Amino acid sequence: MLQMLAACGAPPAFSPVSSTLSQPRSASLAGPLLPPRTVVFLEGLSPSPQYRVVDGCVATAQTLADGRRQIIDLVGPGRLIGLRYGDQNRYSAETLGFTRLEAVSESMPQDERDRALSEMLARSQSLVMLLAARPLPSVSPPPSLIWRVSSAVRREPASAAP
Image 1 (cartoon, helix red, strand yellow):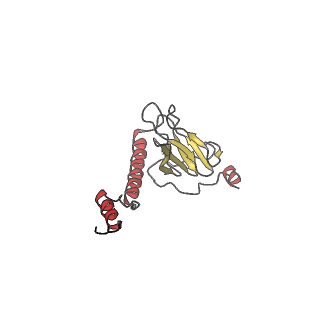
Image 2 (image 1 turned 90 degrees about the vertical axis):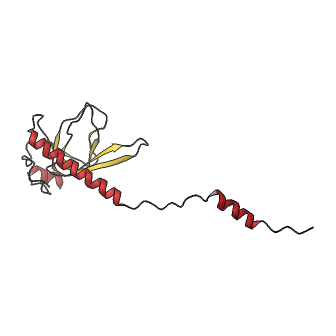
Image 3 (image 1 turned 180 degrees about the vertical axis):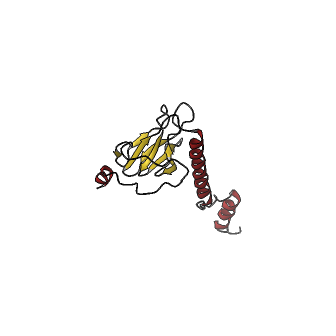
């Protein structure tokens, strides 16, 4: 069903969050409809092209030292992924549902790039505040040595007087 809608050139299901970014171009200029869980690019590899999400959703994530993945951002229609910083990808990107991406020219105007980076920074700050506001799991501290010794002394039976 989604492929039929995509072939008809149906408008994106969600409007872009920011009206300041250029609107996605027609579906004919966009790439193919990607299925869910498609890896767009991987962290640590040479820089990938920059993409604009035309329709669907992409999750960006970094791998932590212990092997877990930390979601950095959820990117929807009209937003950019793959903005370069350095000589390798700093995060991975994977589609969450049926998604259509459009390759963005390397010669993107500086003001458009600045707006995209500002939006990414604002979303990242919101995520940090959300995570910081979550209560930490309660962990009871280990009993102190004094408490353990006093408990052991109280449990010993009184010895009979000689």
